[in-house]
Image 1 (tube, helix red, strand yellow):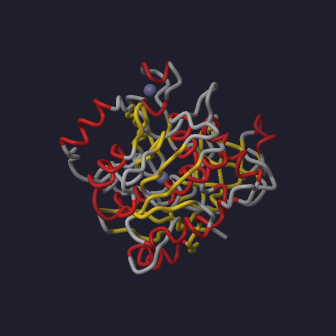
Image 2 (tube, rainbow, N blue to C red; image 1 turned 90 degrees about the vertical axis):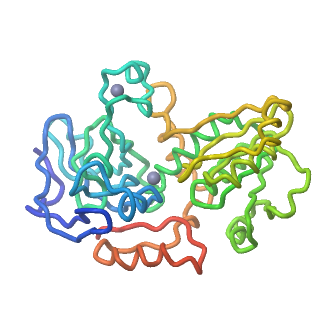
Length: 343
Ligand SMILES: [Zn+2]
Ligand SMILES: [Zn+2]
């Protein structure tokens, strides 16, 4: 084994023991195994899906360390992997079975029997993580760990824009003003699309305005339509509205995860038929030898032309996790990504 720092015997983690019971604890640090490296986690984003797991639905087993939006440094490797030592890396959080039909096609997001950091196995709310080499997405030295920790939602955004086949000149509407909605807007704009962010209140659109995106209030939509519409909320109102906003032969890209049953108004359903609207679903991202959304987003981040950093609202040490979740729950202030940081 080769290391760049001394690896402590125990590490700090945030461990979820049951719904609503997240604890700051010491745990034995991972021991290095074959085909793996040990990563010191620098930043880990708090995903809205983490909030669901921690406070409402739980993880697959208890206890589990949540967190799947990670960046870190490779601090311990097997002798044969010396060239990876010290490298900056993001981590693709899905560990496929490599055996099922989807895996054979390299469509790992559709794997029938996968493992996943932070939901099915321990994840990134942790000082260290043992990571299969296959899941490492190395990035440029000049890219900050903090921005790189946005790369999981960023990969979803790239994936959505690619599935939507966004090209220069497309008119694009985004229904939703959260982190992924904002990232889709920024990436689509970078590809030359005319992007409009649609929100229900002035305050929800404030951030979009600040970073130079066109915005429109729900109440001002009238008869406007767009070539491509991204639905990034997942509720009835937004899904119905997104379909209504599509042009003839337009495309609606469904990104938001619904919390409840989805109902379409009859008039909206008719629009799908009459306008021959394409509905496309988005799940996760592509990470294979042909398409790698992770590399694409990290390259875009390295270029430094898109103001990704402005999407990070606040960073907390793991020891202040209660404050982080309180801040996220406080609805009086519009916030995007909140992250944990390890020293
Ligand atoms: Zn996420
Ligand atoms: Zn599989």
